[in-house]
Image (cartoon, rainbow, N blue to C red; front, side, top):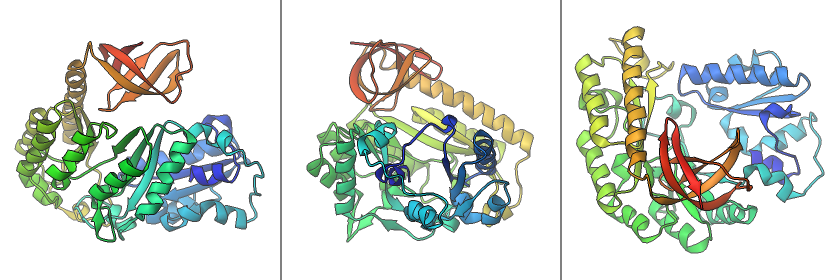
Length: 397
């Protein structure tokens, strides 16, 4: 959506700059996501009472009326309208064509890691998930369009493209899948780094892993969704794998590339989760040696199977389990990062905050360093010297 505006000559600014148009792409995967969306819409209105305020995305798809009732929201558009967002706004007469078409200037705020959605929709129907209700039809971007988009990102100056999707592992176009798409991108574009957003463990195969072994441009980072390390909980969640399947996928990746970061998502407090099942999940996460763990406390979503399940876990118990899993998540980051102290790694530097530059390695370690140079969007080596709470201190050069 940002590129629609940039291509038309609009200037992209920081949300704190008092924009003339605010577009919030909402999430509705948890009640906390809904609450944050409402908070951000009200904050945008306070920053510029005269701005055009647009809400779109999955919250808008699920509960349009809730968002239209927020004072100052001018447009609420569902997911199908996002691809036409700019045209809809200009047709309404509320905004006029920008007229300035210095594309390199308008895109300046986009040029570090570029996210490219190549797939949308999910048919998995996990018991807890609202996504299939707001994005039910799976569809994939045609090969040639993906190649053209990646080439445009390269022309814009992007060093890394992240392929995303609601379920990117289910990408399929004219009988060809994700493996064939990656092969074409690597063969037909000059992108310097290519990363995937998320995969399911059953989508990991020796043929797929060989692509990473054969081309260093593929980032050594796999986000493999787990959700629970207890097989009985996974069955209630309606996940399509068990812990044995998951461990097999992790072993396949690590046997080929030991330095690879494997990150994951965990839900604590799923309906019916006993103390024993939580401990199984916790111990399995310890065993997997994740690089990062994103912890979510179960949030019942209206219309999902899990919302109507019996034996919901008490809030205080969910809080205690979440805190314990979050502590493990911090330990995982520290242990994984410690392995690379003293080594020189390539970092894509993104921004400067408080005198420190920050960026990411190919295997998803966040690195901080001081430099008097402008490092924005540069791939430069750094020596990793000290693990901090949220990353690693590095020395450039």
